[in-house]
Image (cartoon, rainbow, N blue to C red; front, side, top):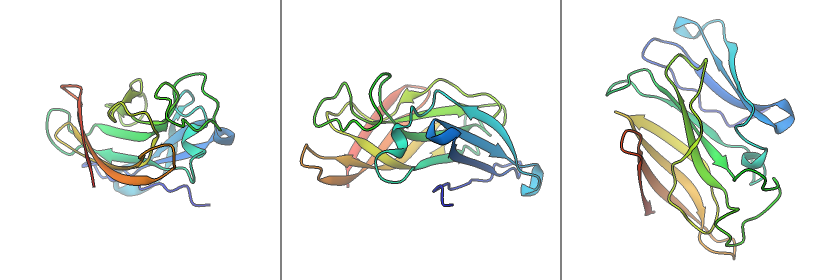
Length: 173
């Protein structure tokens, strides 16, 4: 089954894969030994999705490994999520307190433990979803879909998030 994972290799030769699991209630991360052999589950992020990333079309989450900068080897995971208590089938329809945002988490120990999720897209009254991400020197570079208004018109957006500064910027493409 296609889980839309785009597995990156770290500088140490380990392969990392994120995929939906737990009957859509969590995200699992699996990592390999050096060279990509012997893949095993290393983390289950049960508070990660509340099912929402999988309700806007197909599930899309993305992983990236920072090769240099202040935290070489840090693994980043980005996906769409909604605030606690928002039903998975809810479409925001212009309500910024209930919309899907792009969130990110990171791991500094080979995916064994993860940070809390932080919103890395700018506040917007409509949904952002289906991210693709690359990290470089502690900065997340993302392309994601953004609902422009309640008519469901969608545009691609470039987002940049500086993890150390906690600053997000966006540019419609």
